[in-house]
Length: 272
Image (tube, rainbow, N blue to C red):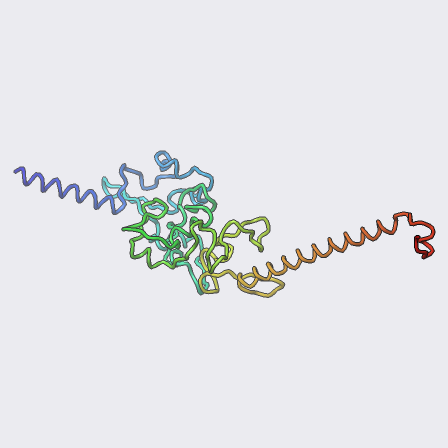
């Protein structure tokens, strides 16, 4: 009898777990529940510096409530890999970022709210380096300390970049900086991964950016190095102009100085 009870208990627990995995909601809901009701328990999903615009459209924009007898199920309105593209049109460029192409947008973006712009899970290069930094891991990696995991094998399959210990230089080669340097094509900003690479899609390999200068399209490498050459030439010209200006001022000052040489010296005589 005791053995049968344990078996029944196991079956009930297993069935309950399976229903939860299928999207069972812990409390009953009406089929036509509105966002206000959802936010009674999930208020944190609507607060933060950057809140997904879909929140204001109502939770049922992305989530579907189904009531089957005494069970409430909450599922996504579309398959997870297609959901974001129901509002955000997918790019048709030739090179697509892996997670973006697979519809795994939530690896980089929080679907509800974040302290970072565009609901990103991290700021600046930290976002890209979560997957692309060359480092050793053991076992699964919880991306950005969320429930989204990369197996050790999946993590190793992602292209890696080798940076110096400060994570400020070394890509794509040698002393090339990836942080703490001016972004020459965006005055006032610092260089980052996104200075050179698109985040979702590009017409070039490795998501390299395309820039249009004087109605001519070129990759970011050529345009940035051209801007660097022009900057150095401008600095050299400025120094040259400053030296020339200084020389002219000195000549003008000498021309204005009174002639104090002795009379005989002025006539070309030699002093005794």
